[in-house]
Amino acid sequence: MNMKKYLAEMVGTMVLVLMGCGVAVSLGCDPVNNIPAVVGTAFAFGLAVVAMAYTIGGISGCHINPAITLGVWMSGRMSGKDACGYVCGQIVGAFIGSALLAILTANVPGLEGTGANDLQANVTMVGGLLAEIIFTCVFVLVVLGATAKTNGATNNFAGLAIGLSLILVHLVCIRYTGTSVNPARSLAPAIFQGGTALTNLWIFIVGPLVGAACAAGIWKMIDTEK
Image (tube, rainbow, N blue to C red):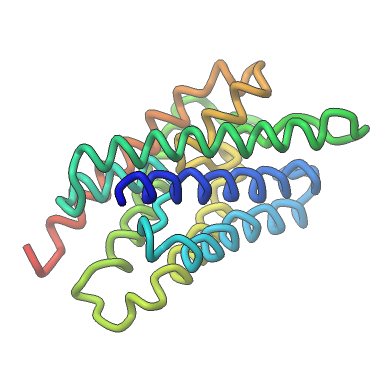
């Protein structure tokens, strides 16, 4: 049964990366010169999360993000073994999604890269790292709150709330880092794309994980079940 959860996370993350990064590439997401593409990319990631939440949510909870898995584990809602299985599934799924996108765009003029995260114009390394920490913290906090037992019937709408919050996070953060808040989403595209996206990859792994840990800590302080 646990293996099915890990496979569900693989499929969900594959869809997230293929659709989210795919829209970023197709629309030419540029936070300075192409604002409509920024909005489209933000909605793509959020809608992908909503779609997967109502597809695999009943199987795995639809983390499709190592940062969320870390936050859930630190909150005591899953075992370390399951957390490792989830993350492995997510990383494999992200590579499948990136590989499919790389194949689709390989011979199409004007479509470049795989939607990898990178520091945007005039954004420093420290600024990018802080952005990833802050916005991952906000996002994971929403996830922990929306899926909490104390929310009662509103749990039925958790997928929608989480997807909408991811849209909001992207609208704010794309200008700084292209928005990761998800190490798996950043790892695979950077490996395929290379260049500065690969050089700066550590920011999009460390930042989200630190942000997730902060969110878990905040949730423990305010959770009425504790």
